[in-house]
Image 1 (cartoon, rainbow, N blue to C red):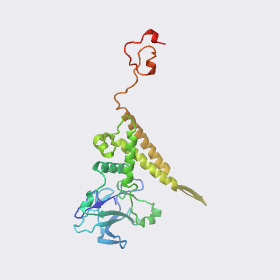
Image 2 (cartoon, helix red, strand yellow; image 1 turned 120 degrees about the vertical axis):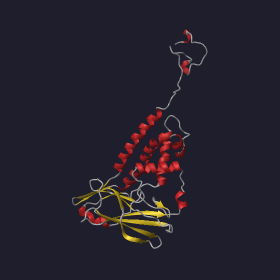
Image 3 (cartoon, helix red, strand yellow; image 1 turned 45 degrees about the vertical axis):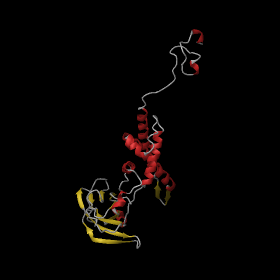
Image 4 (cartoon, helix red, strand yellow; image 1 turned 30 degrees about the horizontal axis):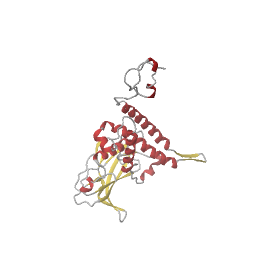
Length: 297
């Protein structure tokens, strides 16, 4: 679960937010919006309502709402859910979105298998892929005449897990180190971030390429084109990820060109300035003295 809080923590703007836009993509306030807080009982697989079922969120700007809560110090660790209910217009059907978060012990929040530098790169990559908090970016969908579909609950999840993004970052670093100049000493993400932070963007671009390739491979297996009775259905997403991958590859190629420009000295063969010497034909001219005329061809 991507979002976790500790008992006694006060939640504010930026913690449990939801952003609404209209069908044109412009930010828009809801005609009516409220939320309810639930504790999810894993044994019973049921949601237990906590307090008022129609809590009023804070609306700091157009289209933005957040739940202002105080996690009680005695809160039971486990999974919690916020169920947002809202209408785009007064006569629109009620739509619901479910956001999940966890309450864990304070010591659990700081436990991580990644270093600070690795965690920073994973978060940056997730942000560039627009996967940092999918619960926030909700659109008023589907259209009005299909609005009844919106009455079903929706739980949004992240596309990539941390372990996947870290794998893409490592593969990207390996590929980066293959280009001149030789940078084998930057053999892990932590060393790269500490020693050459200006190279982070290049690594992120290539990691985006790996991430898009992985999704492209997944969607290739699920594509189909169906048509019967004048009704057609086409599911084809791999080309979209392929386009994203190509764009990321172009940016990475530019970065590798910039890296090669940092080579300060090129060492080559030393040859006589004039003529073709017999000895020089076999490699660098390192003999003593100057070649005489009889040694020229």
